[in-house]
Image (cartoon, rainbow, N blue to C red):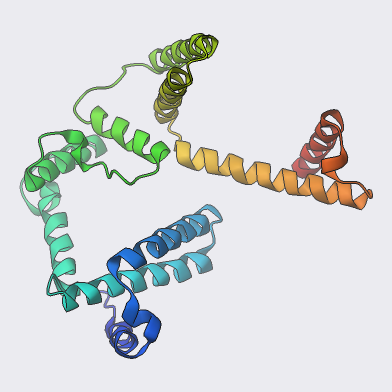
Length: 257
C-alpha cells in the first residue's frame, strides 16, 4: 500500500493566512529567504542533537515555507505547488536511469557520475562546477567543489598526497606571514583551509560537521568554566590567562567523566 500525505489542511491554512493576516499578506520570496535559511539551520541543529521530535517540528516548519513560496509563485502566475512536485518527480526519474531505464551501475560512484552528467545536460551547463550554489557557506562550498571535481577524475590518488599538500600550504602560509602582505596571507590561509577540507574527505569526515561539533564542545566547556568560576566567587574576566587555562583543564577532566 502506498503512503499518502494530506497536504490540503496546510494549503487551506496558507490560503486563509495569505488572504487575512497582515504579516502573511506582506511577505515576498525575498523577505522569506532569510527566515528559510534560519529554519534550515534549526533543522540541522536538530539532526546534530539526534532530536527526532525537533526534527519533526523543523521539517514541518520547512514544509510551511515550501507551501508559502508555492503560494506566492501561484499568485505571480509563475508555478504551482503541483508543478514543483511534478518537476522533482520527473527529475528523479530521469537522473536514476539504473532504476527507471536500462542503465547499469556497479556502485555508488557510478550513480553520482550519472547524476552529474545528466544534470549538466538538463541545465545546458559546460562546467561540472556550474551546479555549486554561489550562496553556500564557504566551507560547504569547498567540499562540494572538490566532490564534483572528483566525479570527473580530478582527484588525488592517495591520502598521503593530500596530507603533503596540507603541509605545503602550511609552509606557504608561514612564508606569507613574514611578508606582512595581508592579502597574500589571507590567500594562503584560504589555500590551507581548502587543502584541509580535501584531507577531511579522504578521512571520510564532513568538515562542516566536524567544525560544528568542535564549536559545540568549546561552547559547553567555556560555559562550564564560567559556572565553575562563579561558584568560587570569581570571574573569568578577572583571571590571568594561566588561571583560566587551569580552570579549562579542570573542566576538560570533569566533562570527560
